[in-house]
Amino acid sequence: MPIKVEIISPEKVLVSRDVDMVVMPGEEGDIAAMPEHAPMMLLLRGGIVTLYDGETPKERYFVGGGFADMTPTRCTILADEAVPATEISIDEATARLEELTEAWGAADKTDVARLEGLMAKIQSVQAEIDAGSGNHP
Image (cartoon, rainbow, N blue to C red; front, side):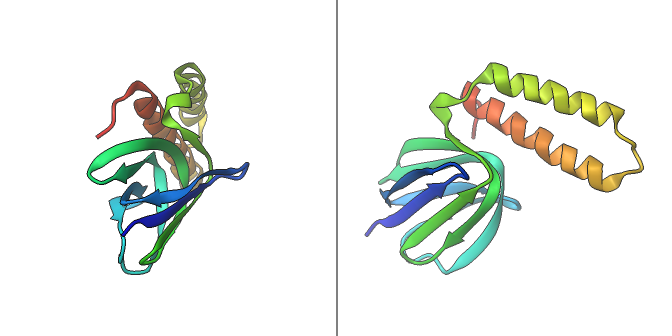
């Protein structure tokens, strides 16, 4: 019995199909959605969403955060940004990482909220680079 997965970015619906399992990057660690999973909503960090047919990973998507809504029959991922891992531009992501690193260096170190926001963006872009390079768990 499959589960219906949808990955939705602000621009479009990237995926809408049945799979056997979805593994996604939760804020507190990776989590798998499978048929009959208890209902749950969770925050996502930047990382890779992997879609499985049987025990075989078939598709990978980078998400730059967002949240997921899981039910026993469906998993809807509303991503801040999402792109197939095969379409990641390492050069563009590296340039963004350099800009964020410079912003971190120039930031007021007493502005904790700004530092936390920058760190989340840095970690997300690093996850994107890792995903595009094939460096993923």
